[in-house]
Every structure is written in structure tokens, then in C-alpha cells.
Length: 116
Image (cartoon, rainbow, N blue to C red; front, side, top):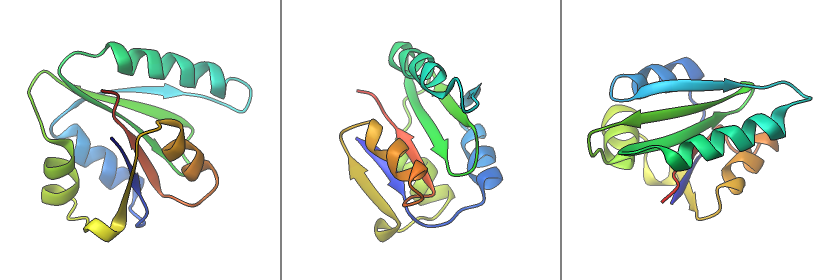
């Protein structure tokens, strides 16, 4: 289940908090190669072993891949325990394109992509 973050959060805070529990790889894109980089990112996310999620944020030209060999509840550990988001700050969707599209449209601050 993909998670859409509607409440504003400083990108640096989100990244640094995730890096406390996960290894990070970023995929930088520009206006010309975004679709190609997104495809590479999604393929890498799908091949990752253990606990993994992708992150896409407003006004940042990167996709981030976070992974851990440990079994971690992303929602509870990252969003509820560390960042203290409330249920009304988040939306959920099955389609990994939805969080990306909502961020691009300015209707979300960030999207967490979890391929299962």
C-alpha cells in the first residue's frame, strides 16, 4: 500500500529520519530523463530484498530508494513513531503512480511507494 503525505514536512527532516533506519540510494532526474529514471527506480525497488520503500517529494528532482535487511513496519516506525504524523495527514492508494502524480500536481508533499 502506497502512502501519500498531505501535511507539509521539511524534505531534509524526512530524509534524515528515514536514513536512521534504512540505507538510501537516490535517482536524480531532469526534465528530459524523468520517465527513464523513474523506470530504473521502480525496477530497483521491485528487486530489493527485505524491507524497502521509495520516496518522492515535492520540489526535489530525485526518487529515493530506502532499504533494510531488517523487517520494519514503515508506517509505524517512520511515520507514526518518529515523524508523528496523524491518520488525517496521510492517504493510501494501491497504484504506485498515484503518489507520484499527486506530488507532481502539488496535491501532496511526498509519496511513499511500497511494492509488494
